[in-house]
Structures are given as structure tokens and as C-alpha cells.
Amino acid sequence: MTNDRVPPGSVAEKPERPDRVRRSMFVIGCIGIGAATAGFLAATVRFLVPNVLYEPSRRFGIGPPTVFPPGAVTFLPDRRLYVFNGADGFYSISSVCTHLGCNVKRGGPGFECPCHGSQFDENGQVVQGPATKALAWYALSLSPHAQLVVDLDQPVNPEFRLRA
Image (cartoon, rainbow, N blue to C red):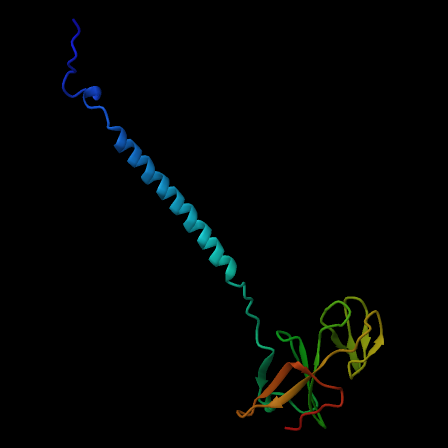
């Protein structure tokens, strides 16, 4: 005769019921599907949100007219801009060479590009290449707070002057 009794405390005392194992597997499966769905939805929402690059304003103040002495040329390196205070008024010229974007330097009456040798006259017109386009001129205005304001979205011709 065999002894069908199992000693108390042993592992084989109570076999786990099949419906409990099935339920556990179902719950684990639902959690996995839920996690995958949540990841997919998060990726979809992130895809729909545009990547925005915030750039500095293209219209900005550069200070009161008294900061720019009469007859002086002021270079604003952070804005890549020359501001002139001539006898006939204020005007601004870009310091960005139209060839490959280097900063031009004041040289004699005009401008010279130290990178590739382009030369521009005092109005920013090309004197010697490789640049083919003139330097850009930008509009200046006076704000209600008596500040000079440059608008890079408003190019002007070389005859432009702001009388302040």
C-alpha cells in the first residue's frame, strides 16, 4: 500500500488552481498591452507637438540716439550690425558678407571681408568679389521711449536716413 498523505508544510500540499494561474497570466498580459498602448499614444502625441525654435526678435532696440556720437560708426557684434550717425542722420548696414556670411570689417572708406577678400564701398555696394550682392541696409525708427529701433525684416535702400 502506498501512503497518499503528504506531510504538512510541504510544497505539494495544495496544488495551485488552474483558474488562478490563468487569471494571473491575463492580468500580466493586460498590463503589457496597456503599457505598449500608453507608449504608442505618448509617442503619437509627441509627434503632433511641433519642434519650435525660438529665435530672437528681428525688431530690437539698440539704445538712445545719444549713445551714438555724431560722425561715429558703431559696430554691434551681437547683432552683426554697423550703426552710423552721419551729418544727414542715422542708418544701419549689416556686417554679414553676402558671399559666405563672415563679418566684414571697416577698412578705409568701406568694408572688407577678412575671410575671402570681398570689398564693399561705404554704401555696402560690391567693389571687388567674390561677393556678388551688396550688404543689406535695415530700417531704423525711433520708439516712443526715444530708443533707436532696428527692423531686420524691413530692408531699405542706401538713401535711407533717420533724422532724430
